Image (cartoon, rainbow, N blue to C red; front, side, top):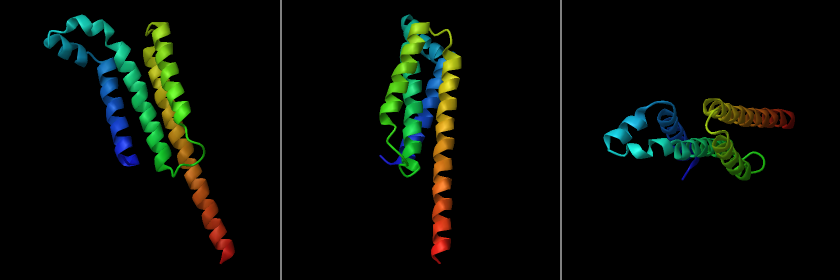
Length: 132
């Protein structure tokens, strides 16, 4: 799977999980299907899916940047597990705040990767100018 498909999959997964977490859309659908007994347990699956999708976005951004620096795979997996465990431990009291913080962290990582690519391309252009 290439980085473009990974990015698209991560964004779509994040959006769907966020819609299902923060709106009653999934509750209505599950209720219509006659499975309303599992409504109380939905968050235990949806938030880890949301964080895993954000991790997929971060990893695909790393791949798109040309693999600058060490692989963030271990950090991403640790962050997904830590955020999910934190939400379970806090009883979902700060779910919105933690989810927004995770989204901001992914955005900051994207900005950092973009800055690294820009810096490297400007250094490459400077090197070419000094050679010619």
